[in-house]
Length: 89
Image (cartoon, rainbow, N blue to C red; front, side, top):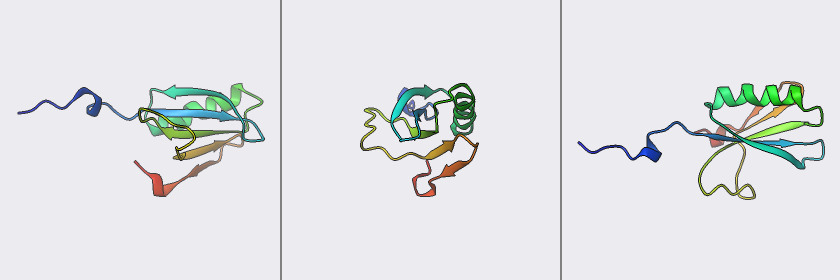
């Protein structure tokens, strides 16, 4: 029986891009959590960063190219989460 390569045997990681009201990136982080945990992490970051207007959540795939990536979800300051169903993992 063949062994699953290590990079295929792990859960996906997510990138959180923190943006201000104009949509400019002000910070980023890689979440070690699943998508639901990443949503909660984004909501906690929003509570701590008053200048954050929303956070994009992306699937982390190496090499990560923010310019070419599409967010899976966007978490807004008011707690609303917008899902992009066409990009589900």
